[in-house]
Length: 225
Image: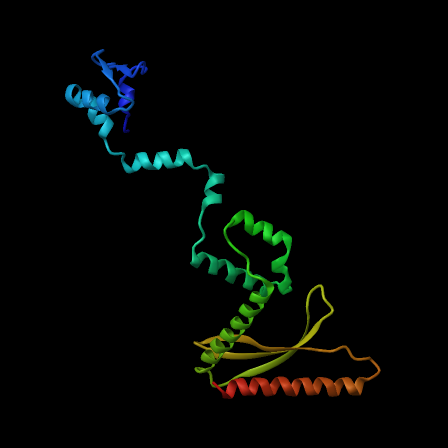
């Protein structure tokens, strides 16, 4: 470890310091130049300790001593790649958990991100909506690419009600074999409006119209591959 010239001298009084090695009194002139000169000329071993360059281990140990865990989190910089990774995770969370986009402006999430990544600026709900739409376009392009290798499809329709909600959807799923593996992709979901139980004929007609629109959309998707 690198030492200071003052480590080899006693207390400085009246611009003078006594050498701990030879007991000679050295004028300081307000700095350590004379102290270093004396060590260089008379005590080479001590002088080398003063000019020794710090090793990587010394620098690391000093850094560990100066930076606590709490301070490390506060001063940690967030790279552009990390920002994108966090934003993509938020978009995934909103889509996967069926959360409203306004969730990104909730105080709890803002507090969590402020603790974990203080320098990260969470996007607004308008930006999140834009990113979700971009993700949708990306998924459509990916499915079209997958369909290039598929010649036969089987379609199923299901009525789905979202958990903890009264919203029901009519979904259509494509089943196909690709790379010797059975796969399934939900192609579209259309919200079903509530219709009076007594208007059974009207309801059947409504469902038939919805089914027609869904199949037309799927047909358009498949023939465009």
